[in-house]
Length: 400
Image 1: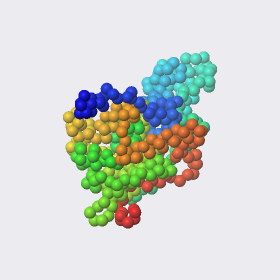
Image 2: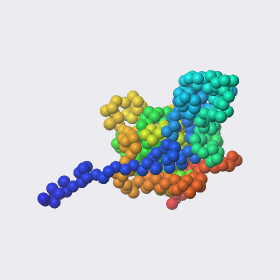
Image 3: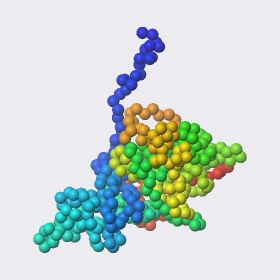
Image 4: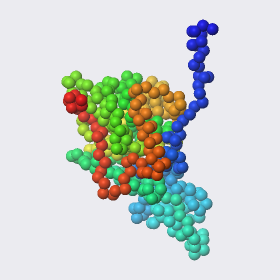
């Protein structure tokens, strides 16, 4: 057999090793390492307007829940399966002080206390002995946040300076359509495939530039010089692009554990601190969605940040157009429901991804040692979290 023939025959797909996914990083269900880590933080589960007297289905971290607001304005987030006989509370009726199951009329308040058992003697002689599983909730920035972890470890819900300090004429608006995900509201792949994208600045000039045509400004089209740094809350990506006038376009993006994407406007509408932040909510192991809150001057401004491909929104494109003009959705969902980590081959441009995985692994070790993970606070008087993220024009000398 000649060398050429041997080289041609070796390395076929048949020789691939059995695939392996690092499920300790990807799986979000209760009892898994990452599932328990994620449950030590607050997560948005809906818009404030989603909580009404009509029960709403919510799925978060692999759990099926029901969101509602009683007639006193209190928000409840209960497990969907009624603790009596297991039917869903989605068909329940919201009343003055709680939600009543459609099957046998058991009524629960927003914290799961059983108030009535109408089929039982005296309206329920053991109603104080049962409780519908529930989660604490809080409302901020137009979003409803839930804490799904151990009660004794519940941190304070953090505030963020970029959403607390308004410029002239600004107010905070929330959006649940997964802006930044590149496709529909619910994206059918693992949450980490998206979250790692936050620390991958090199894909921008390729996927969003030369490959699918410029989706952002010309300032984003050139290949940046990048520095990755650990921060007290995650990873900062500092990108430098030199300009013709001798200045530099200095852009800082932050990935904040466990799921917060602090990404300045890629259209570079202004040179200033970041104007919006997004929470990557793992729905389960194979789907996620993104909630965004940001400072705006006009209602709907956040929605107008959504990318177009060849002049069209993602949902208006044909399959042929998706193939010709792929974006983040195609690139991330194209890795499969959960990517196969054993088949990856990293280059130097993947430093941010490796840092992210190391940092998540460190937090799993922290949890295993019974210590609190990065970024949680139990101080109700703690100041709002400040981010470095933003788009800036700087002198090159100031960055040396």
